[in-house]
Length: 327
Image (cartoon, rainbow, N blue to C red; front, side):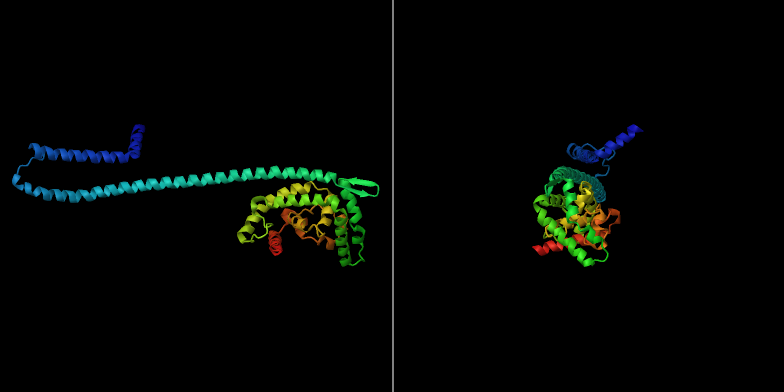
């Protein structure tokens, strides 16, 4: 049984050569019989001409046989061509499937390579940020505060926590005071913390550019497809932003709050809101004042599970429109 199966497989794989060989042998046999009879006068076995007077009709018989056989042979040839085309179509389908699979593998490899390159730079930037934070210093009279102690000093000096807690003071005055002190913080300490916040801005911009689908690039139209691509990338980008946020102390987050209320911190504010960098803000420094808290979009304080993605879209599109206006 196995031998018979193997025989049919060989016939199937070599059917074209077998058909050609059969046609050649048949032509040789017919030609040989004709030459044998008419050249050498030898009667063909089983086809001896017993009535020569009827030989004139042989041509008509030949035409009849040819008229019957030619369509049959043509039909066989057509079947062979169609079968060959079917095999070619299967081979092309396999080739296309292999090409698609190869493209998928290549895309995955490219994505892995891109992620590796991104993370290599990102973690170096985190290391630089950590060193910058540890070298920040602020003078308070004869005392020099360094690192997190410097940020804690800035919070005590510039945050109007007591004022924000007084219920009899007008909310508008509280907001104005918060903004004025935030601007004062940057104006007086820009030489100390300016490079810290500029580096933080560049890290967030780098995170936002992951996947090259950010709207932070001026001149790029916020098309619906681009918005969907941005949302698909947002979770991955946010994971890296969470790593950065985990490096920030409570005092650094409070100083970040002030920085983004100043004129100098406008660009960083977009990323602070989009990636919820104020999520760990100690609300005691703003005396749990909701009006002060609402100076930022609610996204700035939200967990990912609490977020409304429509708010993210609005924030992204609004940023894009501002960038186009600046042009």
